[in-house]
Amino acid sequence: MPRGEPHPKFVRMAAHHHHEHSGKALSRAAQTTLEKAGEQWTAMRASVFTALAGFDKPASAYDIAEAVSKAEDRRVAANSVYRILDLFVGANLARRVESSNAYIANAHPDCLHDCIFLVCDSCGQTVHIDDDHITREVRHAAEVAGFSPERPVIEVRGKCADCE
Ligand SMILES: [Zn+2]
Ligand SMILES: [Zn+2]
Image (cartoon, rainbow, N blue to C red; front, side, top):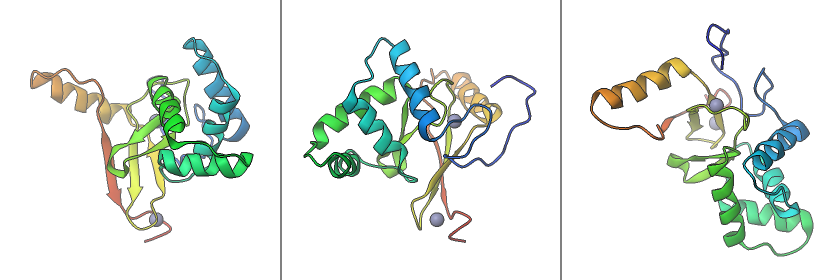
């Protein structure tokens, strides 16, 4: 995100703002990003992405395999979904929410941030915010401690506005 741009402090995963996509636009952005990485947007990968993006909380490979199986009326193995999720994470199409042990579609596959996740302990709904100032400080603090930060994981557990 360019410096000096007003920053929405609280953006739902599915909501639109300048760099975020949802629905068909999100799938298109994901496809473009994956193809730029030299990977093919196969029918199976498209189905897995659509299923993943349909969840408003982090989903496991099993959740997604079930959703794809249902949508396509054929049995899809969690193992093959898992491999695709791995590819998606590497290509910035999906993020692992570590404290939920599950995955979420990246609303901005075309833009690399250290996303901050807000995870509701009651309903599991997970929204994400980007605050490059905070995440830069986290990386900086790690570097000052002589550590090379590769992937800061910042997840806030609590109660969402619906569950409060
Ligand atoms: Zn983000
Ligand atoms: Zn909640």
